[in-house]
Length: 290
Image (cartoon, rainbow, N blue to C red; front, side):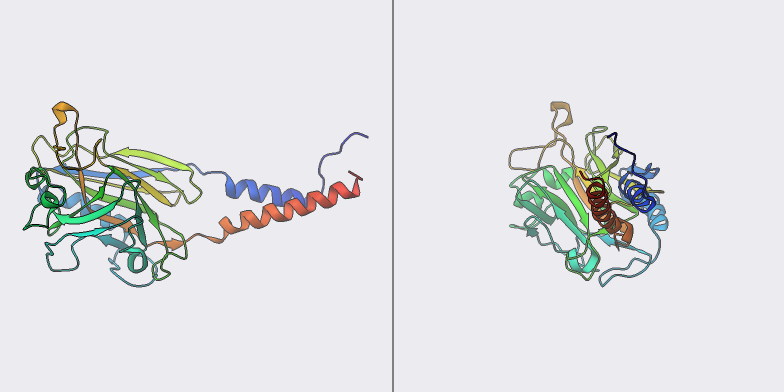
């Protein structure tokens, strides 16, 4: 007997729903960049991106509607000059701001560019050159992975301590000492790990300690993960920034992102639809004696 096409209208509707919710939409990005020798050169770019993300800066606390979150690694309004190392995943801002950071290296460190031993990137990595290579955008401390030049930012609903994954509409960051075009970049993915795009951080300038900013929002997709690549080498003892010799070292400062919000219900409906479609398909086959 020849097989007949599936005619059950409910089953057909479910299959269409599943396809609609699982297929990646066309991601249309809006990008803001800025660069220069110092803070004043990129302040307008950072402020423009803040306006795009929305006000207010929600700081610490549980989930809210609208606004944005910022992390400057400095511990509040006082310029903290001590190091704050942490492992991976780095969960310092997981519950209060909804951001988690992971790396294939051994962890992360928040540190000023230099300081009284054992503090500062200079002392943490036993490399005195880092005191002049990098400069912060806000207050004192920078943020870098340890044992790697790349890391990932993931998002969770603030106040859930990592129990509820979240999405954001935009993410931006300040980078210190980007000397080589295209090596430092951010790659964006949605909550289902569909690739949304890769965006290069602009070169800050020809001198050490320059600053660069890159911020990206999407009109049709929400961000679930950001992969951040800093140059082409990890900070370490004996590893000095030397673009002419093929060594590009970059540090991170402030990060800004839209208020994390829970994944909308349709993402969960995909699984429900798949289950129901499977049951209907099984019932249809039984009726046909398969």
